Length: 422
Image 1: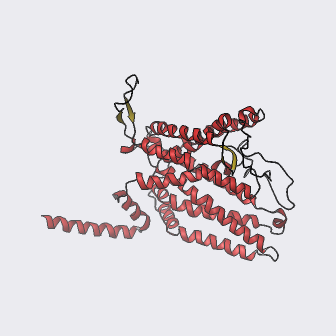
Image 2: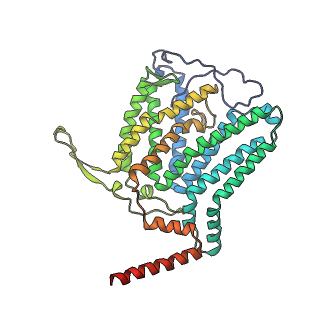
């Protein structure tokens, strides 16, 4: 995504700022004055820095994808920590913090409590499937799963009491502001990121394809805007242009259809992970990933060399992913732009050269991850009760004695039915 040009006025007294502030007034006309950015030689240096950082990020991302589900989840956790750090610092005031020793630690207490709650609910079943049948690990994990909500609630109440005890006269407004700000960050970061982790274990395909489409849309919008952009798209981001938006949309749609065909042919990407192991996955990926021949209609010119294509059914779903990534997901970036203007900062951080902070790169990804999960659960997953699902619930929620009683009861019921049929 393209960024706004900003000045660097002095930092207000008592505020910790790791980003440049901006007093920029959004112009009503094109920010380029009708000129192409490609004609501005000063922009080439920033483009090269941005491209260099992008190569490193894409390379690291590809390596983590190759390593598998657990490593991807760990990457998401690291990204969440950096996002929380950048957002916590956004309203931090050094003067007030000096009078509240340990107050920063309270933010992280709530953060890791939320992390335990969210990931405990998502990964508990997979953790249960991973442990051995040894009695001690079984009892330990069973207890953790059973009392998971109690543990999380106890930690939250501890933080709540901690907050009340640390309240100081003349600092109430700042402390309650930080308390509210912390909870808003937790909602934004964890509510949306939890969908990302859920997508990973449904099959890396459902995480990788949406994430890749956002990256492609981001890069395409930048280059189309750089070389052809003249018409401003939205006042919140005056450097974004209609030329970049339309060019990126076409590129993303084509990429979605092609990438779904490539990714959908690898079981490692399409198989769901039901435990927390790191072994190679082999499964029946289902009808969505079984190719069929698509014959072109008769109105296609005869000189066209290909009359038949091998297509995966999932490619038609991918087109809707591409449409959303092109039209709706960019509004996550527009929201972030408006948010930064409200606080007069250019970027959320400076951890990625040429790009800003981690939060600057994740704005559209968060919106896309939620859509991918909801779409997958609504239109892809078959909503039916399976023997495997029932067994999982029995193993998780019943004690060993209750499982034995259920086994005996089922045996009696089946025996009665067999006698009735004979």
